[in-house]
Image: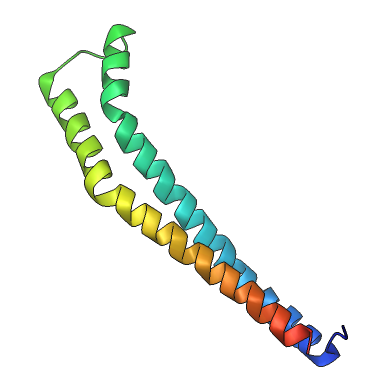
Length: 104
């Protein structure tokens, strides 16, 4: 297979511009998953902090932790799964575009 030299140079310069956007997308997806898992763990962290005597146990803390966990399970987790699959599909399509334009 022969590599198209002009396409290689053009794609290298395009990648220099798009690498920042790719890193930003990956960082956003990673931070979204960190939020999901921290919201799910929040009621357990409240109970653990009480048993370790790091903070005083109040009812509003456990209720707020339960609300955050419920919000994470019902809203944020499906959004995170969808966003992750869309970004993955976008990267796969971009790499397929690279191969098609280089090996003509």
